[in-house]
Image 1 (cartoon, one colour):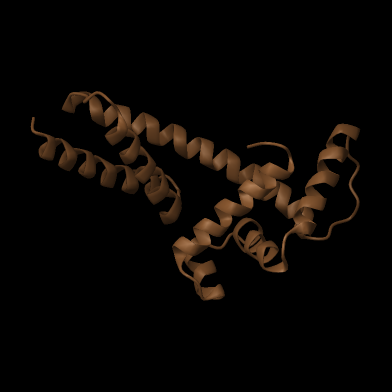
Image 2 (image 1 turned 120 degrees about the vertical axis):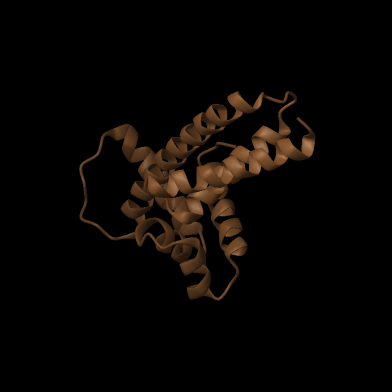
Length: 160
């Protein structure tokens, strides 16, 4: 199989993956992010898998990435919802209290615009395109700001 044919096969499988993820409940944006990551990962591999093995491999990678992304988004949404929407005091464990206070300080240090983007994405559940329309910026601009905000939050916790 020639390299051009292999790339066409990968592209077709990636499109299938996109449709598969959307049919399983993924938003269009998330499905595109996942299948793009899978496509890039397969292209960056040092070996070329036979055509009969590439499809199951790509589906497995997509499934794993989608599950990881959902878990991360759910955790982040829960945390942000807890601190961006005023709530009644909750009883927490002492260890959780330390992390909670730290996260609250990190979020409070963010600009009101950054807090608004986090709120729109993780509390109101708006898509990247909706946020871009509301803020009158491009979709890639929203993605980059969210990426940088997640990075700032991780850095605030001492993670890289």
